[in-house]
Length: 230
Image: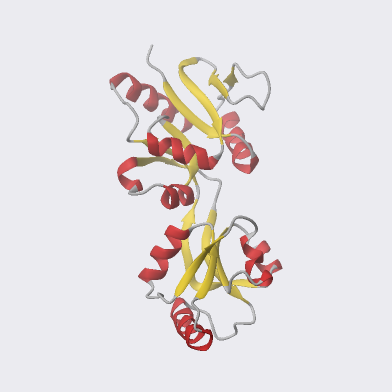
């Protein structure tokens, strides 16, 4: 029997929102002894194998084609998957996991409200310190692409492995790009988003791996699953 492999988030808000959606669609998991199990199935659909993985790992598995479908965010797909449009297809945009990837600067930068203003600050910073302005981020590819598009060139990214929003306060960077939903954490760290500083509007989605092995049977199973969710 042909089966398709679907990866779903294993923890956090994405897991809770996914479970709410599945409950509303009357989709139940089977072969799970507890909520920490990492593999299972869907009741009434023996041809669907479910894996519970982190959103980042789901992105990696979609890229390599070891799963057929996966639930993850636009931000991870566009940041982590090179030439993502050729490797994955967005099948369903979901109504949760919404957040923006933004450029945020300290509140005391009273004359900086746009990317054009930031370009001037970068140039002044280089002239004053002989060093490039530092941008702390977990999203180096998306940041570099956006800054290049806006004509901001005299900077360097600093990879963040912890709380990105605290980097300017701790002296690790001058500004940041980070993912935010409400903006509360940015405000708590005395940061604000530039007026034209939204890099990406992200949400959770069901993505299809174009790299995975597909045939008429697996395509049919996929379509049936998508029909249940929509």
